[in-house]
Image 1 (spheres, rainbow, N blue to C red):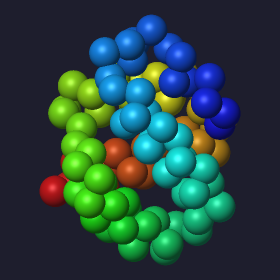
Image 2: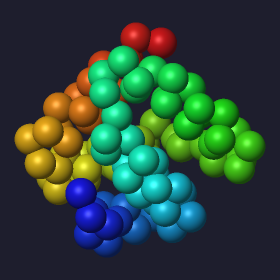
Image 3: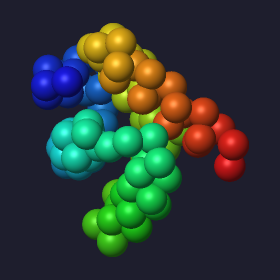
Amino acid sequence: MQNDWMKDATLKDIDPYKLEFLQALLFESSSLKKEQMIPFLMAVAKRGQEKNIAFSDDEINKIVTVLKRHASPDELAKIEKVMALRSRK
């Protein structure tokens, strides 16, 4: 997934710094295996706290909607897995 998704008008109210952070995470996670996803997400949460990056539920929903529009079938499956993990908390 390239960074074309960040130009979507749906995301116009989200800080570009947050979107760049997400783009970097998407790139880093692209080669992870299923068993590596939880430790990766834990590290992401810590990194986000260190950089004072937090997303509102509205921002998350907008980002996920846009990512789904631009995702390949494999990427879409990963998004669905992450969102399922998120809904369990």
